[in-house]
Image 1 (spheres, rainbow, N blue to C red):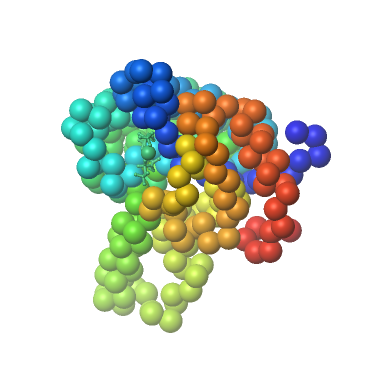
Image 2: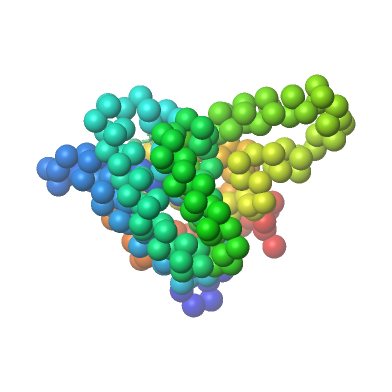
Length: 236
Ligand code: IPE
Ligand code: IPE
Ligand code: MG
């Protein structure tokens, strides 16, 4: 780790829970349970390494198409983390924000999110973003609709629309763009994640499934990132 430049913002497409479980002869659900535990562990690893922003893709707008059984297992896990594991993180100075369309989530989950965001809003440690019911196209569509209303009622002049204006009107407002995107489990696609924000982000894909992606794996990703020659984005 010595001498390594640590990225300011690491984003992760946490993929492969199902394949991890399958390889062990377990139900997919168990992969998600193990994946959840891994998120909680990596939070503290990121903080220790000096990463300032950590964003994870937990549930996409497309993931509703999975079986009812799997969606309900994922929502149960989510409830449990929002009411205990992430609450504990908030007590440890972690600031938690949810990106995605919260209005599409169950009422009790929306309440848990509101409390967690409110309780952690002044925390100055790791800035942790969880993408839930998130899709980049959906985020941009919602943003356009809101901006359209503001133009209509005279609050916004079309000439005011700049790149910064757009960034400030997305779910990620106030959060710098990711420096490093990690996708576990080998797929080479974005799956509708942060299309605008990843414009100049470095990508790192590993065949390791998410439940096995530990501190050593994260350090390997940071080492690879250090070998990249960045031109734009947050390159210094
Ligand atoms: C990622 O693991 C977790 C979620 C999308 C919720 P998957 O469930 O996609 O696992 P694979 O891709 O089927 O192995
Ligand atoms: C991406 O994984 C979404 C999350 C990690 C939440 P998926 O497994 O849902 O994506 P696809 O289906 O491989 O594109
Ligand atoms: Mg997958």
